[in-house]
Length: 231
Image (cartoon, rainbow, N blue to C red; front, side):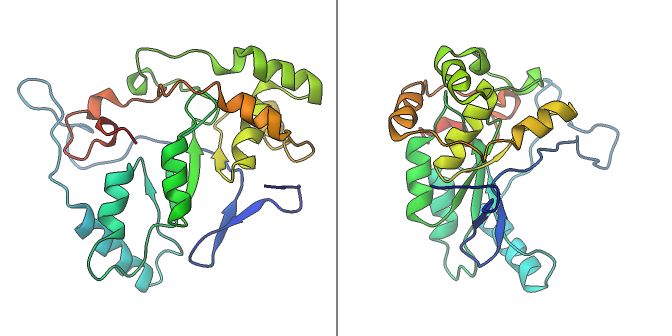
């Protein structure tokens, strides 16, 4: 994919579009009750029983009412996507799926599946970093210290982070890096003035370890926990 500063949006299957790079935001939800995350007598989180198809139908109603422009999902695996795509009387399919994706976790199989169904992959944690320890897996190799990414950064006068972001957008993946540092935020957007070669893209792909940074272990007992499946 050829991208320039003037061509920085990706079309969605419903006719809308989103920026190729955006700001990542997160805040804890405000829920009724004394506890944000209620637990049982054993200290385990109490989960609602969910029906993904019924939830999707409610979102479709929001789109029909003009309350939203596009409908997407997050953390969905192939099985969950197929559940929606194969739902009887489906009105709107998901236009995007936001998942962890970076050079150490390339999501090749999920990306191919989403591309086959015209679903845009949106990469959160595109730099392989999360400061929320409750979300992390037990193994987290520092992506930004990678020798290959740093050597390519020196070649193009870029940081390892900029190389990692460029890698994903050249794969047709939108990225949403998160930072509170104005300097780094500015640097994250300075990725449209260079391109990685085909050989460099293939070299970065070999860095894949299929190990998640964000594992969400506290949700592993949820009936729709997505990471038990291969992808």
